[in-house]
Each structure stands twice: as structure tokens, then as C-alpha cells.
Image (cartoon, rainbow over all chains, first blue to last red; front, top):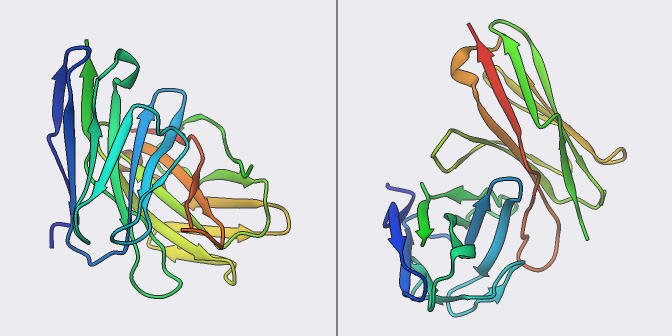
Length: 114
Length: 113
């Protein structure tokens, strides 16, 4: 049981390049989330998926797109990376027993955009 | 907009001390309150989750309480150890929608030997 996994762990991009961050969970959770974490800003929600086949914008969606490929996988795409997108990106999932909405986080992807 | 505040932002204590971390939320119609730990360069690990119908939860040396009427939760760490050094975040979840949690910015704790 690996929990939430993210790839890659580190990435350096040049301005204008594109990339996809991958996330997968093996806990049969319905909901999945993408956050970014910046010093002094805390955790900010980019996009989330309440269930397979649905996605919704969070607090800071501009410059990002997501795909809920299936129940296990939720990817985040940067179409044209900008230095302002330098951050640590976390994927999370939640769901399971009714009334229990504990979020489980992946180890993060550290992205630098030059 | 719901807001979650954690005070203090940073705390340094000697080993063995009992300590309390504070979390305040503006909307008392809370569904649950979670406490997380984050080690440097790592993801968040859930420590405790308190449902709105509960007053507290305990796990080992950790005890978390919830007072909805005052909009506060506290995380009590007994007999602190250097291994407790980390950032502690709280997150409030509200009913409706997809239960998107609202996170505080965390308290950075250092326990020195």
C-alpha cells in the first residue's frame, strides 16, 4: 500500500516549457487535490476532483490544467511555465468511510522555473 | 470566506516541555478539524482528526481538542522530544461541496536537547 505517489520529485524548467505532474493513489479514494506551497503563503488549492470524471477550480487555477484519468490518477499540467510557478506541488486524496475525510498527501514535486 | 489562523508562527522549546499549539477558525459550522505534521522537504502527515461531534482526540503523546463555540482547536504535545521538531498545520473542513479543507499557515516547532 503505497498511499499517494507523485512523479517527478524534482524538476527544472525554462520559461515557456510545458510539463505534467503525475499523481496516483491506491486507497480507492474518490477525491483528489492539487496544492502548491510557497513560503509565507501556506498551502493553496489549485484544482480538485470530487469524483472520477469531475474537476473543479480551486483558489489559484490560472496557468494550470488537470485530468482525472481514472479513479487512481490525477495529473496537473503546466502548458507554458512561468517563474511564478516555481513552488512545491502536493497531491492529496481523501475519501473512504463515511464521515472520515482525512486527507493523505504525497511527498511533493519541487519545481523550479528559470 | 473561512479563515484559519495559527499562533505562534514559530516556537522553540527545550526537550521535555509540555506545549500547546493553537488553531483558530472563523466559521463555527465546522465538519471536522485535522492536525498535520510536515517535516522539512516532505509532505503532510495526518496526526489527528476531530469530528464536529467530538471534543478531543488522543494519539500517544498528542491530544487535540475542539471548541466550536469559541472557534478554537489546540494540539497538546506532552514531554516534547527533538524528534517532534517539525511544522504543524491545522485544517478545518466544512460541510457541503467537496469538503475542501482550509489550512492554517502552520507553527514551526523546534525542540532542542
